[in-house]
Every structure is written in structure tokens, then in C-alpha cells.
Image (cartoon, rainbow, N blue to C red; front, side, top):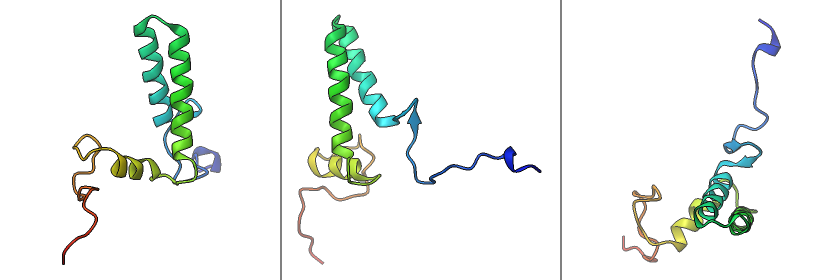
Length: 97
């Protein structure tokens, strides 16, 4: 067995990548670009793409890998869309017991 037969990742906790972007930033940019294509304006789609990727990267900066999930939990209404079914609603601040 040769050492070159196996690829060892540099970081085990690194998020998924599409091309050179994080997967969530790529999806946000692709959705914004798709909206621009559907509206018939390439410049609008490009501007929305850059704004979406920049805003998402600023939102995630300095918070670690789970920061986006925490922001969604605290600032968006409770729903089953975000996979947080087992957590209490964020508007309940005090618990009895």
C-alpha cells in the first residue's frame, strides 16, 4: 500500500464546497442569478448574486460553522422548513421547571 493511494482532508470540519465557494453561498448566488435570468436582466441578476453572496458571507463571518443556523433560529419565524423541529420557539425566553 502506497501513501499516495489515499486522500487525507486538511480540515475535518470544513463545510461542503462547490467550485471554490461554500455550498450555501453558491446556492444563494445561483438563486439570485436565476432570478435575474427569469426577469430578463443580466445586470440585475449579477448585482443580486454579488449582494447575496456578500451578505451571506458577512452574516457567517466570525460565528463558526453553526452561526447561520443560530441566526435563522433567532430571527426567522418558527417553521418546519429549517430543520429545527426539536427546539423550542425562540420567542419563549423563560422556562418553568
